[in-house]
Image (cartoon, rainbow over all chains, first blue to last red; front, top):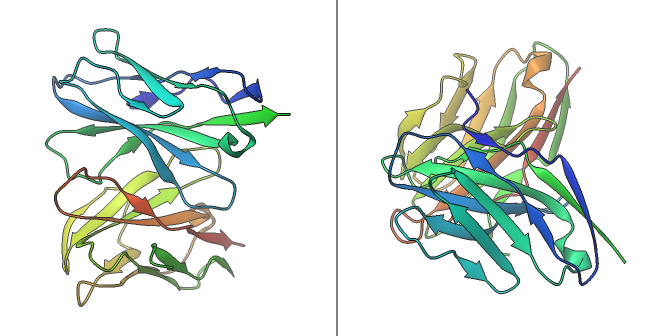
Length: 116
Length: 114
């Protein structure tokens, strides 16, 4: 069964504008980690942002921020002031606290297209 | 370049042939992971090593797949008797055992089975 769901196959945004990517997940755990990874074309995947479920405060990394709604099992990513370099596939990922650090469950991804 | 390195980047093979992929992790990382990514999907966990010990294998890793990390440094992933369904991007990642747990990925090895 799919644990992580990204319902938007593609999102388009103009430079300098804001885009929000959706992610929902299914778990019975109370403690876990959530991540957003970015995969540019033909380049390696890199971590954008992470969130520990026990922390109520939403994580922020420069222009990237999340809206973590634990009760709703929702974890959206907001990209502010979009730049051409933000164009990539974005994956939401989940990890149980009891799993190895690197054993992640990924969603199917959302392609972000940035237009000038 | 001190990132994760994977070779070959692309491999085209005929069904039934064996293929081997190599991953060189970041030197100080003692954990190494293999993932498989098929078209239109996110990566799926296959297996991971801590140093030379293979600590977990996914049910996706059939008997035709074998992974090794003999000296706790580089790792190889071998697929025997390839099938068309094996066509995918094979991603390697490494991390420290402790800390933030951030994964550092390689660029992947793309396998096409004809």
